[in-house]
Length: 191
Ligand SMILES: Cc1cn([C@H]2C[C@H](O)[C@@H](COP(=O)(O)OP(=O)(O)O[C@H]3O[C@@H](C)C(=O)[C@@H](O)[C@H]3O)O2)c(=O)[nH]c1=O
Image (tube, rainbow, N blue to C red; front, top):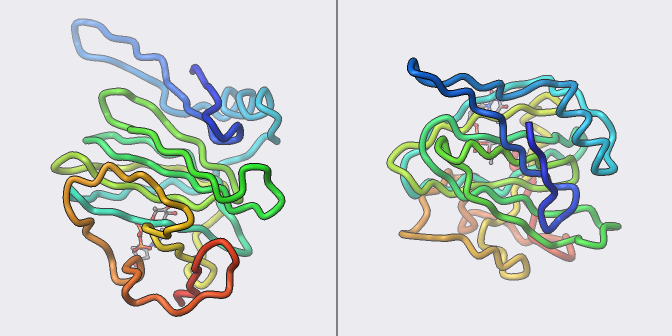
């Protein structure tokens, strides 16, 4: 498993080795020991991943930007079918890259996985008819702790590769957001 930092050094891209033969292919998509070695090689602590999720979305669905406030989750995101533009936003107030974002195309074809550490908000936009996202998390989902940052926050100015108006859930629709107190972005306590 090859791993490289992105423009935000703690956000990593992983590419599993693919073993192809006449039957098709085989790849290990996650190995805790190698994953930890990559984190440590990039100055981060080893991180057990405790929850595994799958979501399916249609073309032009945008989910995000999400994070948990008191129980932050690191997320290792990959795509098993289709293609997405995956985004991590640094929301660590003390960070040199606070407010910066990084976005990469993840697809079943390119096999890339993005590591979004704790202290980041996460979202994605779907570029294929269907996209199946598979992601492992470093802490458990807690609905009451989930927070949303508007996907189109002008201060973040994320350059989404929009092909059409995004399809949003109600909680992700900035139209339904309250006024915010956060200095960088509007945040909403959603539950
Ligand atoms: C995220 C999540 C949701 N759910 C439930 C709650 C709800 O009934 C249903 C759909 O949840 P949501 O609408 O919150 O799903 P979604 O909008 O896909 O939320 C996800 O978005 C991406 C961008 C992330 O980064 C994830 O961490 C998560 O926040 O699934 C769980 O049971 N466990 C989970 O871990």
